[in-house]
Image: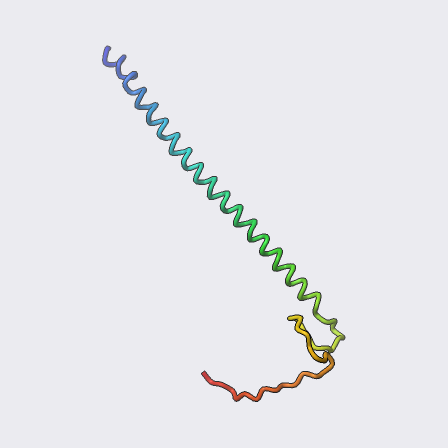
Length: 99
């Protein structure tokens, strides 16, 4: 009977130690997951910002497109041309290249 009464007291510290060790491992895993979640959230915000900027650039380009009835030269780069009514000619004096 003495063996039975001493056994629970000997295993209780081991169980508590194991329990505390398990809690510490869980805390570390939770902290790791929280860091990863925060990093993903920051990446998402950065990507959303890039998408918004790209959409604004596209909208700006689209707003500069001439109407369908407009026959003027399309100038998407915003470079100044000497005369917008001058017809575009193909001055390609280069010989075709083969690679």
